Structure formats: C-alpha cells, structure tokens
Length: 200
Image 1: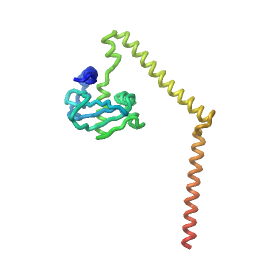
Image 2: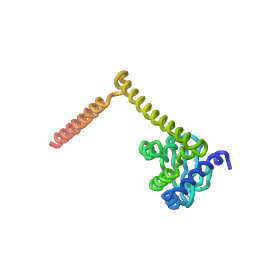
Image 3: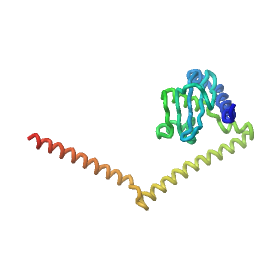
Image 4: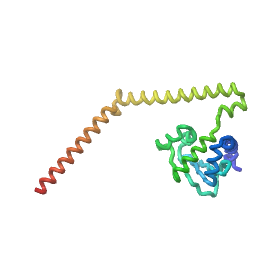
C-alpha cells in the first residue's frame, strides 16, 4: 500500500461508517455497486478512484477499472463537492464531469450522506464541549470569510467602476447593449429596404 492510500484509509473508514449508519446511504450504495468514479485534481497528477461496493466505498490511487464518471476540478472545488454548495460548483464550471450525469448526481448524494460530522469526530478526541466550541469557531471563521470575500468583491468592483473607470457600470453595459441592439435592428431594416429596391 502506497503512502497516499494509507492516508486515504482513515477517510474511507469514516465514510463507510457513516454509510452503514444511514439507511438512504446504504440503499444508494447498493444501487451504485460496481460503479467506479475517478477524481482528478486539475493541473496535477493527483487522482483517486472511488470503487462502490454494495455496502462500502473503496478508495484507491490506482486501478485497472475504467471509470464510469470522471470528476476534475481544483482541490477547493473538489472539497466542496460533498457539501451543500456542491451543485453550484457544477453550474459555475468549477467542476468538470465526464460520464453519466444521473450517476454523477447519485454519487454526489452518496458522498453527502457519508460526509463526516467533524464536530462529532473531534469529540472523540477532545470531548463534547471542546469539540462544540471548536465547531463554533470554525463556523464563525467560515462566515467571516464569506462576508469578507463579498465585501472585498464589492469594494473592488466599486473602485474599478467608479474610481479608476476601468470597468463599466451595470447601467453603462445595459445602455451599450441597448445601443448595439438598436444598431442591429437598423441594419436589418436597411438591408430589407435595399433588397426591396434591388427587386424593384
């Protein structure tokens, strides 16, 4: 067993424990048995194969099986895949899927069922109270990070649109698009008029 597979073994154990503890996850695992999902980190040689058995997931770093689904994305996008924002990573292009889209969605649902509750996992090491407190801190940091990113994006957009004038405002873009549409309509009318003149 190579070092990466050894590192993935505890992850597989946690995922499989959660699959065994959740009836919908067990049913989905049985339904997907025999499926192989390859997950590749974009622009790297890192890859992991999820081989679905009727009662568990096997994680491997190399396999002879041809994948039914290939998922490719950045490390951050792949980490988000099992969470609630996972669907948005597909819509916004952060993740690329090759293969059966229904199978891909069902696999994502299986991962969501199997996703560990980090607070619960941590409580086994540091106790319930400390794990809950650490969970609150992590959620607070995540919330602050999202708010900071949103505020920073708004500030940068305002600077580029209002101060440096490097980007047009939404109003300017809409006005420009309206002018382009009007010009296109004028050209279409002119072309139709010229065609009528040629025919007469």
